[in-house]
Image (cartoon, rainbow, N blue to C red; front, side):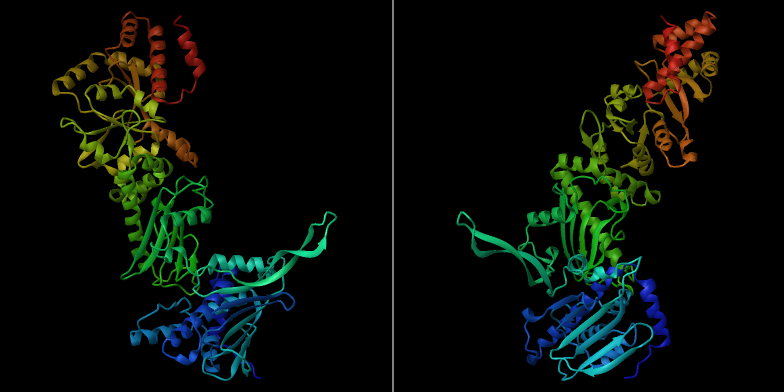
Length: 639
């Protein structure tokens, strides 16, 4: 029997596929099983019009048979099979597929009825077997033919095709597994536990039963009695041929067949999560791109949520065959906490099926998913505010990062999902805050700090609250960036009570304040010299009512942003500092005492009081005092 050679371009492509295209050896079983499923699809479809097929749906199956003695792994199907010519065309010419031709013929006839998988449309998945096998033999017999065909190849050096006897219709793919090496234990692909795991991972939802011989221990009665007359028992190993795949995925079943509680139970088992998800989204979409999806918003954040192993929780399937375990292209990072599955027959897969050939279908699916996820979160916010607040504590950082991402590209889509604390523990959306604003209020006032308690105690808040206006309190440096990115809410600008002009002063009050600044300029310059470079300037405050002093900032960097940058990964980022301004309350007795010392010519006392007020302002603002011991010494001199 003469060996036939692959075409030159096919040799190069075969070598490329074995060594480059596939990044994960274990997917070879997915490919071979998918091809077997395709073959059964074709015969099943043919049986609708050809009564001579003589098989019902219950008769179709795929057998996976490991043989450690001969070091072979066989995948056997009772599908449509191939003729010698088809072996030449489909196996001898890489990237030509009988499945693609079959689908084209169905399209021409505008066939209706059962949907047919075209997972194998590129016709190259078969060659992934050479990643784990040094020789592959295909024994096949086409439906309607009396004689079978044997195709054998050891890879790029060529192949042989010869007639052979085969009792039944279908195809056997026999892979002779490579010897083990220091880098790879190929023999693991002959272990039943390993094969079952791969089938569960990649092919669990192939529509036809995948069967294997599985050993298990069985307890039996020996027929003997113990000293007390009780029967004796022993254990023996028995082998049973069982179906190892689920076939029909839970997301493919209708709501009348599977309840939401069933879906939640599946989610908890699949993700090893003891807590119920806070929301479930079930989708059955038909149209330009058809797909089914079952999505879950977890009840709590995973402690490793930002690591590579946990990022991107949506698994992508095509007709029940897993394509990507964690598809990060379906939804943007701001919804990366969502877990679940998406299954579509309309995906254009690339040559290795590990990536998508085109992004158009994925973009359409992703846009619809994001709208549904957002809608479900808004519903949760309306119907169960406490549960939504718990969700936002867990995952709000993702929403905030999404608003800041790509220069605010997604801010209008996400802004309605934000909630912030106001007075007490009450949390509101920005829209709700604006709706409850008094008519006289012109801006949305906010204060930012490390904690809610500290933000509420900032002295700059007093003037706002005294006018009957509510503030929103930010407890993360990221929050300030979010509001800066949003710009406004329903035409109302955001106003940082620490850094911005509150806009309360009349023209006369502003003029009086300017005159007061001029009157005290020499004293303020002295205080600035006393404090040194710790502050950029000193001025009399127009915001304070009861507190003696406060620390504000000028420019784009606030004190909270400075804290954020100090925790940054680079030295350059950690050096970023806010431009600090010391504000003094001219109506407070502390300033009056300082001014009295200055007027009396006691410069040393005035200097010490200036330093004490500067350190107090740092403490009140939450900034770190660089030399607490020196501050303590200054205070002790007052006694």
